[in-house]
Image: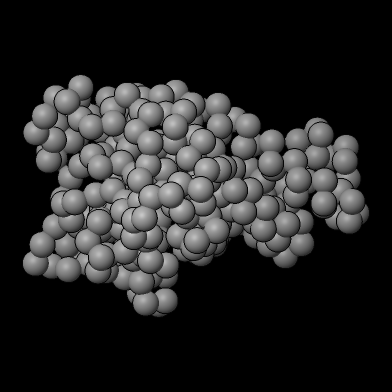
Length: 264
């Protein structure tokens, strides 16, 4: 359903000028599209980790967790649900900002480079995410929120919206929200993040609130031009299985092929 919605947005209101099958890398992205649901399902098992920690610390009873009766704990968990949801959105985006920056550091860049390797940036490119990237993100996002005492229902209910918004940010449209361009992330904001232009490297990490980029000096939104050229400097296999394996062979590949590496 989401595919149909964003296909129509790009076709009727966006920049799409060629047929789907003429798009570079479409077969690879379709393979990631079918892998993504499985990766997310497996990622949900990571929620068990903070639950085990809370049970071990005696914060909650195992029976309450198994019965689905656990609704958070402490001052945080006793807040109104709507208040928790707002705090979770802001908190998750703050965590996501720093997680994203971490994935641009040398140690984790090989996994995140798979996502950045798409040269045809559109809604489908949003699903080109290495499983390791997806699982680490899910674990680091959810664990601190649950350990702080937030209601699990409120915490996990935010995920569908953030998934939808992440797809929207990759849409092939030049929308920047005008006067709100510095308030909420837009497709142009995120398309600059994917740009190959050196001045745009390691900019615009936030997934929802550009506030974090403004505060920490990574905001980049020129008014006189649009992002156009996407991809990475390093070599990357074009096939699905090649990209799944690429991060594990990264050091060997980079030592054999003398190419510039992405700056941090």
